[in-house]
Image (cartoon, rainbow, N blue to C red; front, side, top):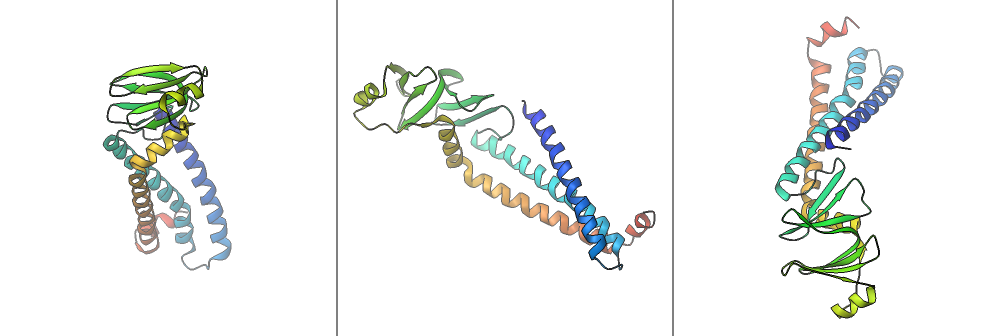
Length: 215
C-alpha cells in the first residue's frame, strides 16, 4: 500500500473516530449540561473532535515528513521503510517487515535478511535461506558462511544477531526518536490550542448566534 493510500485510509479512520466521539460527547452534554448556552456547548462538543484530531494528525504528518527529509528515514506510512545504518549503507523493507535488504549507493548488497548485527563497519547476519554473511562496508566485501559457528569462528567473537525489523526500529529511534517525540509534543500542543480557540469562538462570539438559531 502506497503512502497516499495509507494516508487516505487513516483519514477515514480518524473521521470515524471523530463521529463516534462527537455523538457520545453531544449525548453526555445534552443530558448533563444546564440549558444556559446548551446549543453552543453542543456545537463545541460536536466540532471539538474533528478540530482536535485532524489538527493532531496533519501536524504529526507534516512533522514526520520534515524529520524524514532531515534524517533520511521513512515517514512511517506506506509499504516501504528505510533507515541509514552507516554513512554509505541503508536498511530497506518493501511490503513486508520480516526480511529486509542492505543497499549501498542505491545498489542492493544483501537481500532477504532476517537477522542482523553491526560491528563497527561490518554487518553480519542470516538470510531467509539460512545462510550467514559478513559484509565489510569499507572494503565492499561480502562473504557467506554455512553456519553461525563458522561465522563466529572467523570473527573470533560472540554473535548476538537481532531480528532485522527490531534492528531497524532500534536504529530509527537512535537517529530520529527524540525528534519524533518533539514533533508529537508540538503536534499535541497545537491540537489542544486549536480546540481551546474553537471553544472561545463557539462560546463567546456573537456571530455564532446566527448559526445556532437555525439549529
